[in-house]
Image (cartoon, rainbow, N blue to C red; front, side, top):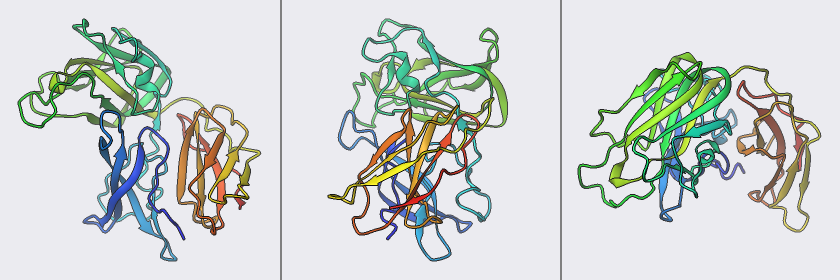
Length: 324
């Protein structure tokens, strides 16, 4: 009845299709599956990995809630696959102010912070020292940065050759004038890191994050689909969404329309649903909207549905749960 158990239709990268479920050496369950980019080729895919498990009634679930956000790698058996893997490092870079050394007319700077792996910023071909800088508006505690390079203008379509590596310098600043190094790969000549991830467990105080790009694989242009900064920002957690309305389509019960009132200070929302109020195992991340049409329900199944709000501080409690 909890079908599909692996589903990730929102966020930076969508997918959770073909995959497999396995146990790690500590006995924790994981689900691994393909993720969709599908820009240059229909099967342009990546691999996603999420905690999974069975509940007390033997129902299999996959935790894709905040599925694009950092998760902890375990060193023991989890007590709770929903809470233990999530360090609560929230996204700090969404739609923040961006400045760049240059940009292609079809690929502006804003595409690097729009939470869409299928759009990207590209520097102008004449730019000899391309860079991109994010201003998060206020000083935040940065715990991790994910650098998602995009394939743009590549002239190499096979893995053979000596040109498959990235060179970049990642920096942070509290003032915008004095910079500290987060990651230096300017001397790298071997690692192909299209989705590089840098973890800063103790955290650093920063308002600005900047990347300078020196080399892209395959003769590609300097291009980034997502410079994603994670940690804790100032402020308060948004209130739980109010006035949640859920209308199931009478002619096609596989469809339900969900709307809710905006929550102050919310960056986005997770629409959560499942076969019972205690089994809200499925979620859909929605940014800059208070409306979602679910077209993924089983016609004969009853569902419980609700919405939670989140921002750079954390996630709210659940709104009122309704059954349809």
